[in-house]
Length: 94
Image (cartoon, rainbow, N blue to C red; front, top):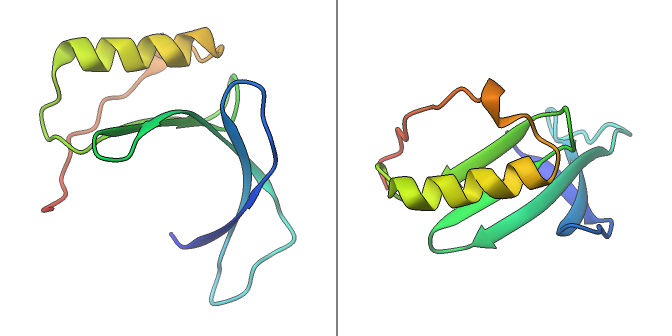
């Protein structure tokens, strides 16, 4: 989904606010988007905050389990309940 983002600070990482673009229209909604860890060539860990959505995205289809564990530890440290995770297989072609 296309979206527009604004830098909003943040204590644990890079804090952003995002709004979805719906048919070229940007509603007056600013959703939290906190980047906890990023290595552009390898992974992104982001969340909407404790008790909210979160993503751990990697560029590798089958990332090293040790790398995944370390990224999940960062989420847990931010207050995300990692026991509720639903792993999704990487389906991209690039």
